[in-house]
Image 1 (cartoon, helix red, strand yellow):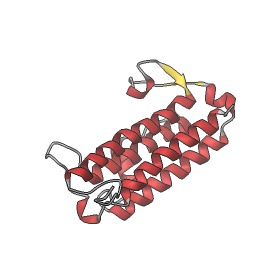
Image 2 (tube, one colour):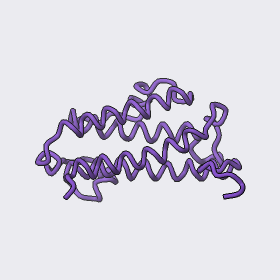
Image 3 (cartoon, rainbow, N blue to C red):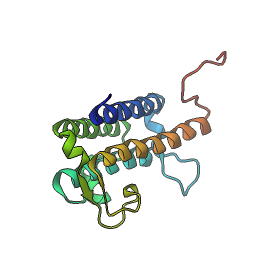
Image 4 (cartoon, one colour):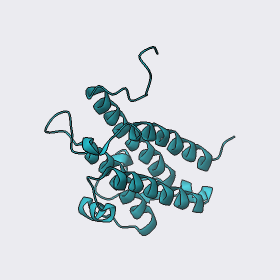
Length: 164
């Protein structure tokens, strides 16, 4: 039977492979583009992935919420592809280090979410492990958007040739 650590790490690794596949097809000139004016730009999708993970990890580690503005300040250049790629990698390394530091009992501990964060499923508390699962789910949601963005630009996000 797999431990919760193993399952969470596998989920995070799987979604990250999907994100990296999309990242490999992005270019610096695409960062300011979105299919419609009201939609997040490509860079905005990456910032959303990084900042949410950063916010949730800060909440778990330090019991405080950082604002979107604080997260953007920590990220730095929120329009630069290389910086955003570094931020994506850096925040995940921190998440995995924190996850590895937790015991199975700590993963089962209930954590409180004030303010009705959607990932708490409308519940006042959830097991700490569920926060990690939500990070993966949230990232997959935005990877799906990036995949659609690539298709909209005529780029096969899976890199298949015309014969496939």
